[in-house]
Image 1 (cartoon, rainbow, N blue to C red):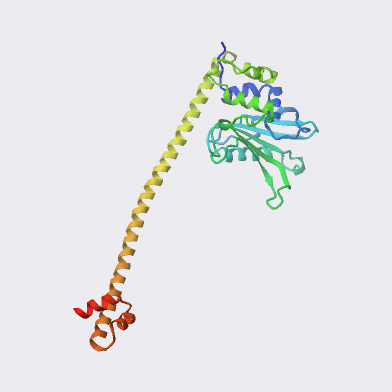
Image 2: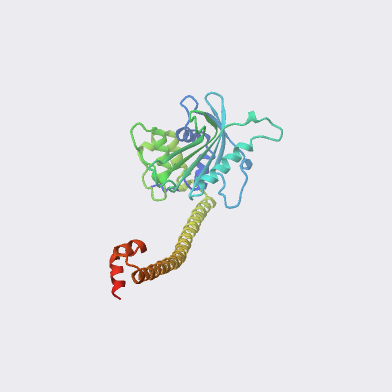
Length: 311
């Protein structure tokens, strides 16, 4: 019985899609929002220096230049992401893939559209069940007018599920391959093996296809993912604790300020009460006004005037 490696690890993903153009072409045609008459016809891998290496940014998994059925070319910049900072990371790398196409002095019309494809092994939109997210620039007042040159596609693998029979079959099978195959897999679904490209991808994910050095890189990859997730989790908890502490301090400060305000308010009220009562006593002693008239003049209750007269 075969033992498999998880294709989301960079060493596995690159062996499958970074060395086999026909597999990547099938994968991209299934996942990208391409028109039926503009699917990828051929592709070539771009050099790694296409996107600069930046500290704390994961390296790009695969960069390719594609030629569609209509003879138009575009670039696809791919990454596998595990953390919530992926959107800015993808936008940065896709933007760099766009601007790095031109050499100094070249004309802007030579720029080719760029798709950023991010396979996300975490949930980033907790308010929606959607797992496929397609972003591009549109005119906010006239959404039908678009700038197609830079588009981002994010796929949340943990939320991936088949919705209807009308879903693209090849897309579903490729995403099942990416989300379901792992070290615990002992039997591969027959429908995967019915697609030659996916069958070959399954074979390339078998542990036996890897050298000891590649297996060591595989383990190192998962260690780095675990460390990154732990650091982020720790930062989140530290942030929550700091927020709770600040909230408590703010609550205490607000309570103290409220107490001072209430004290001042009570003092003012007591002062007004004393002034009004003093005025009422003077009116009682100096005039022949009735108790009702004195109450009206001072704003005190009739019972208060009666109590003052009896003192």
